[in-house]
Length: 189
Image 1 (cartoon, rainbow, N blue to C red):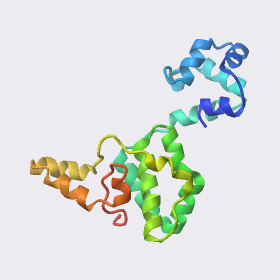
Image 2 (spheres, rainbow, N blue to C red):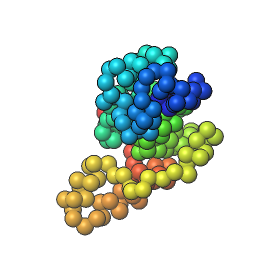
Image 3 (cartoon, rainbow, N blue to C red):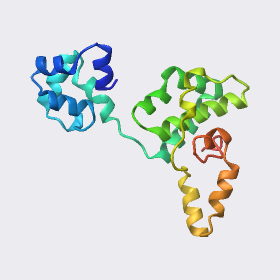
């Protein structure tokens, strides 16, 4: 849970937190707004903030300390998870953990939309109704088309743009809706 979510869930004001913890209000405000990165703050600031919010320092830092993998690695991990769990268990696990919303809240838009596209694709091929929880998110779209690195390299070698055009034509519709080129989620080793 992010610092803003903790503050909101506990119905606290930044002013009260700053006053009780001894952390300057502007510092706290900068942390909450992302201007100052919490993981770059001194241990005393993190300690005071964690104590005031009644959470551990680890709980406070966890959301900002999780490394973001390369997008191709993320996609590979999702495809392997699908292969390992099977369609139905993959859907149940992904929806129960609500990873789609979690990634979106972190501003990891490609990851969030890729996972949503995977869920929608799995629903279509298994004739399962779409999960209503993501109706608003389905209106989102990445600004630029995201291609697999293999397509980018092949297109650069061909120098004519045909590789990218063909990849778009062969892409799974649920992924293209979000400007993500993906044609094969089942063929993983």
